[in-house]
Amino acid sequence: MSIAVETQLSSTEDLKRVVGYKAVDDYVHSGMVVGLGTGSTAYYAIERLGQKLQEGSLCDVVGIPTSTKTENQAKSLHIPLVTLDTHPVVDVAIDGADEVDKYLNLVKGRGGSLFREKMIEAEARKLVVIVDESKLVEGLGMTGAVPVEVTPFCWKHTLRRLLGVECLAECNVSATIRREKGNIYVTDNNNYIVDLFLDRPIPDIFLAARQISEIVGVVEHGIFLNMANLCIVSGKEGTRVIE
Ligand code: 5RP
Image (cartoon, rainbow, N blue to C red; front, side, top):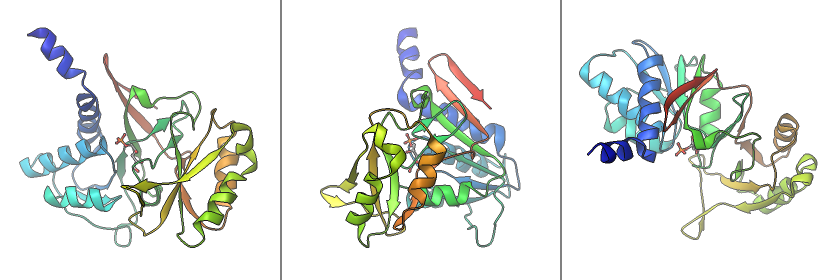
């Protein structure tokens, strides 16, 4: 019996749920404007927020969703939603990440929502990142794609320009247009995503972010620098907070 419980508590879903719930329990207070992240970990923060509003332990909270998927989940839980147009200051944003380094710089967007995430989280007084420990890395860019949202207009040209980013050359950069069920993946903003793959961590992440942003045709990239204030990390031993 105890073995079954232990196994259950260390499942991937449990690791996501525990950080999602903790982020809401510890950092969301009544009256706040909350940035609602996207992904399978942020899902649990939104679930928790919905529960607390429903039971009345939180009130007067409004959310700003970072994707249509999150918007749909929040609506199904009756979380009142607003936008940056009417609520330009976000008290706290809660979101997952694909990679987190020791300075709390992030790679995000493997779920496809990086632009809205960055726009909303850039306005957050506090960005709380929620991950399991598999997301912690020594250097960014190693465990999977670095996503870049690009305009559909001449995307092949933009992809070629991304392959030419000088400071990525030593990482043997390769690039693919993201597809879903055989078709090019289209973001909530009707753009495409180019996924960059590297064979080693990006040596100068600030330079890389700048050089990628400078390419005309790039809408936004998934490198989030100096944005996160803290990171709640779950592992088999429990949760810890990195600040
Ligand atoms: C979506 C994102 C997500 O925050 C990121 O992909 C982490 O997702 P998950 O919690 O499902 O691992 O950036 O675009």
